[in-house]
Image (cartoon, rainbow, N blue to C red):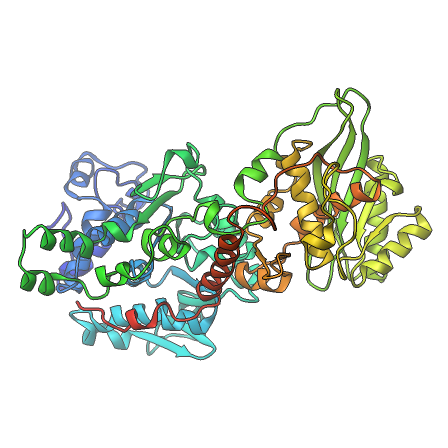
Length: 617
């Protein structure tokens, strides 16, 4: 008899603890059908009394863990991860480099799978399979190898760890028929590479016990989050995001926004709830086990020998932190493990600029509907933003954005793609009462063909060629500077024309557009060249860094040019650029930011000299 249950002879304590964990055995136990006689609809009094002898999933999971890995190095942050795993349906761990986020979760993944390998499907995802195999995959294999009784269970599982597959599942047993063997293979721990991933790789795999674990989630594309949402409908689901935070305005960043707003938390906050109810754990390197130990050493509470003996070699160390300048982008990413402030990264559309474009514009005269479009190129989406412009009480022009359409394309209709796009755009614009003269489209690539069809079937529209040199027009109504003196290419001018409108206070309704618009505008970075001209991050670099094409953001960039074509410019505003105070520092900061992000999201090895395999159990 243990925890109020008489167990079968030969049942190990480890197996008992895992059963209690899986079935939530304790005060909140709800799965009575597992113990009730057939036909009984409610538990009897004895069962009601016995359920309180269980200690709950966290207790039993921890007990099983300690049996499996008696020499594991415990620290506060791992305890937090284990608690979140047992008590939360979905949670996130953000933090600095070497916070041991992935390492700890790898052990949790394996123990959870062992609790019910016949019906558990766990997807582990990283940017590439190679990256996955060298991080979370490696750590899971290490967890298996370090088990106290590995020799007794290893033959039970089939482990595939090759250049094109990572999978762990139960090994088909002698006597199983083909159907049973196939069913076993449908469960397990499956590695997925995010680059080039489609939702079909994850969707369609249904089981009551489903887990999705994302490593480096800050750079994941929407396809992953869509698949995760679909999988979360499982009866027993766990979704975990692990990341070094980068931008608040990305899909990942927005999922971390606190329920009370960003001003309610800071880099010292240990944990909080996001707006969608997700638990966010935050690991600040300055508050790590090693740094607390170092503080004791400095304060002479422990000797140097005690400090060196107790120090966890796989966690961040004081000598690593000492080499990084306080307040820099690297300091936020690699030490504080917190979202960098706007001043550390040169972003075309920082948070305060985006917030200025969320006001609502009111008119004293009837406004004119307008539309801007980024047509589809290859696998990109065709995006159409609808808005309006008109005179305000002071006589100046204001712009209010209203809604977004993703123009559908059906390749099986037999109709040429460009004709499909053009005719669907035309239909939407006519319904929204947009005239051809108030419509602008990116004419790069096959956009020329779409524009030509619109010209012929609807009326002359405004074409915007994104390539080439900047124009000789001013950026604002009272600014003597012309675009060609400020920007390297016309695409840079386009990006900043939209920013000028946002900062003027004459553009609003940004919140009415598809949320991806803000998500894609916010992370866009720029550098200032030695000649003083500005160059925005190109589309290829953006896609490499964030894993998706910025179609929603690019469509809106046509807005400023549409107004400029009409001879309408925003009020003069103060935009950082040549001649500003601190310009040289801005150059250095912008270049440095690009280097840091390239190292972080180009998937170089993280600070190689500090990332040897030093895990000590």
